[in-house]
Structure formats: C-alpha cells, structure tokens
Image 1 (spheres, rainbow, N blue to C red):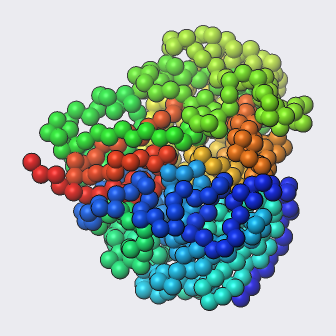
Image 2: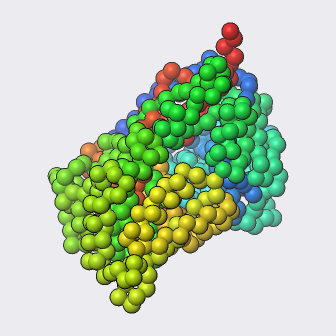
Image 3: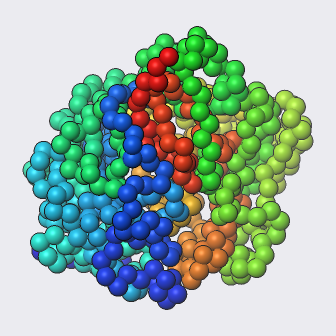
Length: 605
C-alpha cells in the first residue's frame, strides 16, 4: 500500500552535523531532536512517574464553557480538548523531562535515514483499539492522510512535507519527506492514530461523533452530556498497561470534567467539594481565597509546582488584518495605554511578573539590549524591514504604577498623532473623521479577562478611543476566532523548549490565511519565517538557540499582543487524597503531568 501526494517546496539543506549526531543506524527504542535519548532501551519508567503508584479512585476537574462534539480533530464544533491526549495515542510518546525526545508507544521501534530524509516505525503486535481490534498499518496510513487533508489545520504541515507514505511490511510503515528538516522524523511519530472503520461512510471534516470515540489510549469515554459533563473511564483491557512508558501513569479509574457557565460558579463548586482539583491562575487569589473550611480542615492541599519552560504569550491580541491595527505605532500606543503595573496590582496584588517576550523564562528568550553575535547576523539581511527595536533592543513600556498612567497615555497619544490620528470633540479620529473604535471579543465566563478589559476600556476612553466589550458564548467565540473574525481578543499560545515546525502554523504568512491556525494576529514577516528555517536547520544547539532568540525579537518587536503576567510555577489546589511524584519534569505541570502521573490514595488519620 503506497500513498503518494504532491511535493512540498524543499527547504534549506538540513545540517549534516545535526543529522550525524542523531542518525539511527538501526531500529531504536526512541529518538531525540538533538543527541541521544536520555533513557536507555531497558528503562523501567519515565523519570517523573511513580511506578509504585496505586490504581483506583477518581479526580474531578472543572471547565468553563461547553462542548458539542467528541471529535477533537476537525474545525467543526467544540470538543473537549482532553480527548486528544487521554483517548488517543500516537506511534511515539513524549518524555516531558527532555526538551524533545520520543519513545516507542504504539510503535515498538523507530528507524531513520542518516540524514533523516525518511523515518520508519514498527507497530507493536499487541497494540489494540479500545474495541479490542488490532491497530494496523492501514489505520496508521489512513490516519495520516485523513488528518492531513480533512483534519484540523494543525495537521497539514506534516502531510504537505511527506513525499510518500507506504507499508514496508506487515507491521512497518515508512514516511519519506520532501523537505530537508530533521524535526519531521519526530513529528511523524506524534500524529494520533484513529480507527479507520469508525469513520467510514462519514464526512470526516463534519463528523461530530455522537457515539464515544474508539481510540487506543488508557481511557475511554464512559458517560457524557454535551455542555454539562464528560466522564472518562480507565480501560481495564488497555493494551499498553505493562509498557515501561506507561508505568506509574494513568492511575485514576475515573477522570471527570464538570462544565460551568463562569469561573465563579466553578470555584464555588470546588469549595463545595464537587471538584477535587483546581488550577489557580491568580496569585492574589491563591493567597487570599483559599481560607475556606475544607482548606482549614486539611482536606484541601495547596501545591506549587515549578517549571523551566518558556512563558509563551498571553494577552490581548490585535488583528492586523484590520486596517485599524496595521500600523505598528498604533499597536505600540495601545500597549503603552495598557497600565500593566496598576492592573497587576489590582488583580494579583502585584505578585506576578509580566511576560516580557514569547520565550521569556527560558534560555530561548531574547536578551536585553541590542542584538549581538549570531542573532544579529541572522537578522541583518532583513534590517530594512524590521520594526524599530528588533535590532536595537525592545522592552515593554512601564507605568509609574498609578491608576492615571500619565506617562503611558502621553506616549500613546504621541504615537497616535504620528500615525495620523487626532482628537476632535473628545473623540480620536483619523484624517477623514472616522472615530477610533473597535470591539474586544471575550468568551463567556472569562471573568479575569472581563476585569482586565473593564480597566483597560477606561484608560482608552481618556485617549478618545471607544472599545466595546462583547461577551459571547463558547460556540460563537470558537467560530469567530477560528475565522479570525475579531478586532481584539484574549490570546494564549504555549511554547516548548524545542520549538520547531509548528512555528509555521503560528507565525507564517500561510497560517495568516488558514482558518484555525494560531496566527490570530495575522502577521506576515519574511524575517520570522527565515528565523524558523534557521531553527529547523541549525547545525548545533548554539545555532538553534540563536535562531530562536532572533525569532523572539521579531515577534516581540512586532507589538502584536498586549502581554499579561506569566506563571513560573503551577498553583494547584487539590483534595488531600490526590498525590503526585516527588521528581518533577523540566516542563513542570504541563501536558501529561496532571492527571497522567497523579494518583488517588487515602492517607488516613
């Protein structure tokens, strides 16, 4: 069986040095982006899992919003995001204690060409779907094709970079790439594997799956009511229960998600004991709101879990597809008018530091001051097109902390005048007399965003700017943001210690035109795309870091997002029967840490 499809444009040549360092001469138990996997072939468990953890019990989370589909792989509808990770598996699984290393999961081994121009996986003979049927090479090839052609846009980049996909044996499948990109061999191991027979005769792009999905992972959908709750049950017949990669993981018998209209109702449910775990995103609330009876009785514990991953970006994103936000001076003015210090003091007691760049809080983040060395060399060819501050150094404006923020507003007005705006009868207008007015789109139940927006709107009024806050339900919010139908909206993108091909889905010009991509700001930057290419084709870890820092400069100086505060640790309040291992991964409590390696155990009196 061979699937062939169009060639994608070839990128720059991949580094011989990188390929040589990571080359696999024979089937291996794992693969790392750089160097070799940290764990040996005979490892007994992931380093942050407790293989002695007991099985049983339940954990109950709260979510705001709702869902109307059980298919998390298309743009149609709103699905519980957890299904992608708890109900489906991929050929390889990721260790969250290494920047980017994968180990065999559905596949027992992985092999690549010395230059990583192809990758081959051998399926485990015992791999099964939750209905007991075997996972076949046909399921694998179909999954890659259907996701790449009809699935969510996040899956298309890999598909377009595959020249051929073929079965090379009863349990082996090989992907040959049309681009010189050593990361593709790893990305090919991370696609979810779906059961082909469940989707036969359906329009995959519109498939909403009213019946539970058939996956291969430790959990299956037990009970659910759209928009109200979802209950996942640990599969007693899970095929991979004895794999070292799964030792000490997926310990709860039941994982339940309760849905609420807003964050207040959710927190009250946690206080009442309906929920057993709650992640807090506000340090002031962490210090002041957790003095209710269950905490005082010791029934609720407060755990702080540090991490070493990048901050990512959280804030209000400006849609540059709108003419109003096309001028960087306007975007800088709106950033200057955002009184972060006063907002932070009001909402968190000033306890949380601000995000300073997309990769801040990590070695990948841009450094203060002018670009130097390799970073400057990478950016130099684009000097004429880079926005001010990219090469010279850019830092977010700071206010004096007072509610008036006179300095920030004066700077904002100066920039707006330079961009052609003027005040007339108390309103900011352009040369044609059109008022400066826009809509801030907020998801229903996002009370923190509402609080920030209320403060921000009052500051903008002093500039003569009219910002209308429009709160919509979950379905409308998803539909509008997917289609980039907004002026400004809250935005969150998480970034890893090993950014790669997915950055094109975040920042490329193609992504700006692709509904469902993460390029909500609509940025188009040749420099950013060149830095992504440099990252993917780096000849060493040092060159990779330099390319990422250069990309961080382009993104941050682009002034696309008004940044909020960051979290250098996770703050989780939970029932005292819930426990987690002492050994923490470098990624901290992210992705598969909660609930994957937690467990339920009554400690007694």
